[in-house]
Image (cartoon, rainbow, N blue to C red; front, side, top):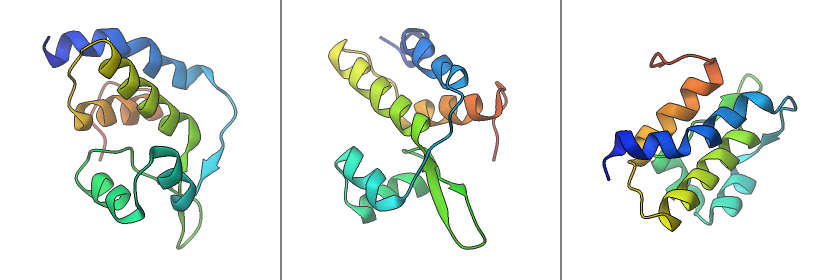
Length: 107
């Protein structure tokens, strides 16, 4: 199955981002624990576009939006269980687009 078709299957997961009103920030260590990744791997995946990027919460600090981490994990699990293939960077872009409420690519 191609990535475009897989996107249609996970679209409800991504759309759920906008329906959750509460914003909870999760710092790097907790995000790494939730994903089962080490800190270095987490930051490398962010740099490579393979994991949702954090948002600034202060002059020198960042955190992840919990619902975005949840959406990434839920979509990854869904795809794995249903034999769907979607590149991580495509999934990240869908989540970032939902953050801004747009289909446009944001940088």
